[in-house]
Amino acid sequence: MATINTIHDLFQLLRDNPEWADELRTLVLTTELIDLPRKFDELAEETRAHKTSFDDFVEESRTRQDAADRRFNDFVEETRSHNAATDATIKNILDDIGELKGSNAINAALRSPDLIVFALSEDLLIERVLTAQDVGAMLRARPGIVSQDARMSFVEADLLIQVKDGEGEDHYIAAEVSYTVGSNDVDRAIRNAEFLRRLTDKESHAVVVGNDINGTASMIVEREGVTWYQLRRRDTRPR
Image (cartoon, rainbow, N blue to C red; front, side, top):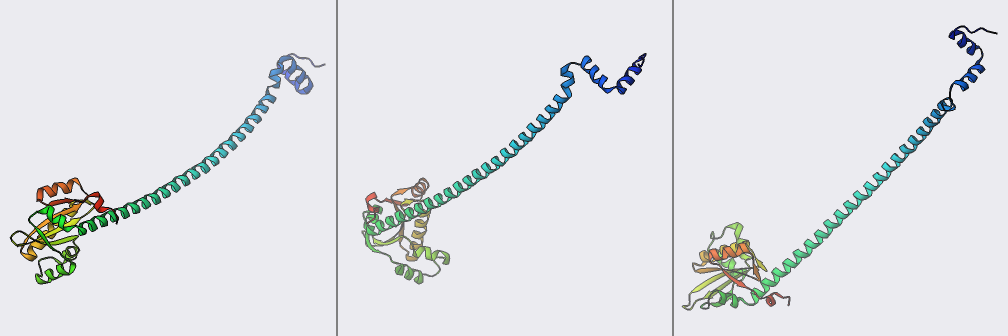
């Protein structure tokens, strides 16, 4: 039998007899310590499995989020397109309504030019409503009075009227008509009245006609002494 005198003799004996080392291990170490490497391996494997499962979950979540983002973006784009189409339709309808109102206002003014004249002065009597042919004749008789770029606009004026006062003198009226009178209407009426004065050498008057008048136009009318004739609502109803 081997003699054990030093720790090295013990190590050598255990190396020569591995089963003794196992027996010694069971005596020296607790069951938990002996089983620790196996449990550690199991824990490591379980951790790897959980990590793989978590990675799969993250990837699946990312895929679902990407799909949800695409659906949301598609919805936003579809909504934006729908709103744009709706806005365009509404704008077209409003434009059509605006044109219809403007046309009805002009028709109402043409049906009752005598009322417009009366609104300007009770001493004036209507002689005639000038046609485009009448205006063209004026322009040919006095070339150079109206610039080339303003001639067509002047010929297409909403309403030009020749009147006489109580002494038999001719006057002219330049009327611009809109459902809601704006500053541009007032400016055109003033400009056309000036053209008539220069073409005829007669006193001419600017008048604006409509159902309503906006604030800016109202201030210009007051400042420039332009006559404002308000149509009645029933006058501009379609007939």
